[in-house]
Image 1 (cartoon, each protein chain N blue to C red):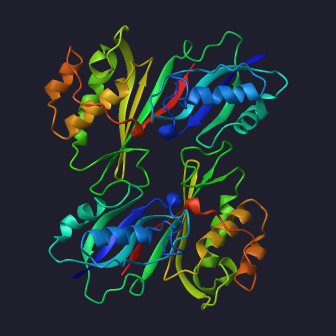
Image 2 (tube, rainbow over the protein chains, first blue to last red):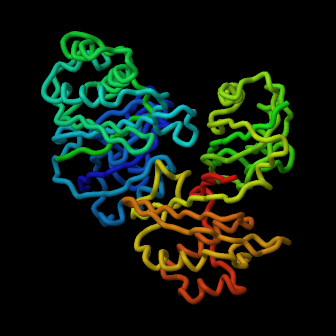
Length: 239
Length: 239
């Protein structure tokens, strides 16, 4: 067996999330592990991050152990024969024997897509959040630097028993036509943190949250809203 | 009753095309006409163009007759309550009494999206054509002006008994990252013509069709391929 790093693209719409849950639920991990088994590999795929139901990924890293007989360059093709159309391996890389996709990740980057328009969104309905104008993008942009650095992010996250301190390296915004893209790069994230940050930013942009209240979320407050999963994408991890 | 122009966005994936066909087939027209009836309008919607199964639209114009009691600004909202998530009215405009969405259109514009990459396409699988590199974009770009003007386009179209002369005002290409966008603006198009032109252009870009053979399609030849529907979008019509 040889340890490999697989970069996987998936459409989260038809999955009950990335990780194994109750038997019978369709997950990205379970689907990938079935393909690994059919190729003679160990049926265990470990991801760099965890994404909820409906969240997408462009290059989610997984580590897995596969027979050395299959050339690395053929691996994506060989696995993709056994994978359904909503999850595919886009690249395979050799990894050192003890490599761990989650523990060894130095950073993770997420994207959140928002479409600001009067008309409902049809073609992008499972790919972005629809927000009616007005949305004060300058107020949102001004709040982004407040999120950067090391903070207690538990006010943006699902409540759980973990160290609430996380380091966000970068929070950025791009605007292209009616689309607003928010980028978040951090060492790691609490569960629900990106959706909690986007929910609070959108509330700020709609004038339903003051800049003071936004700052307060980092000091014991609680985000007023969690953005829905369909606009969220795991972009990549660095090692 | 008052005649209105409705601009409609739809995801063609779940429709058997735009126009009425055999009973029991789900069409964009049939779905829109049901919503018109529920709002007390005449259950007849006439589109500017015809799109096949799997083809999308961003602003497809339809004319229809609706009760004057409903304010124009409320019409999209009122109709969208009765429309499913894959087809929505994005704008409603007042139209003169005899206005006809198909006969009065001065131009129609289509977009075709191609993703050029090694890895299979997951998130955009119902929204674009996937082509593996290499694709000679300069050869394709050089062929675009040959299509402009008035020609017999029947070599690019589905065979049918119609005047084969059509006028193409513009054929253009934009490249953004791994995505190539082809734009075609014409007075009107033969059935299958855009997909036949894109099929021939892609064959040219892959070196499977010579520039001479491409030119020959306009002189009694036949396109070697029709591009699949999922990359095609009706963008807009002008009146």
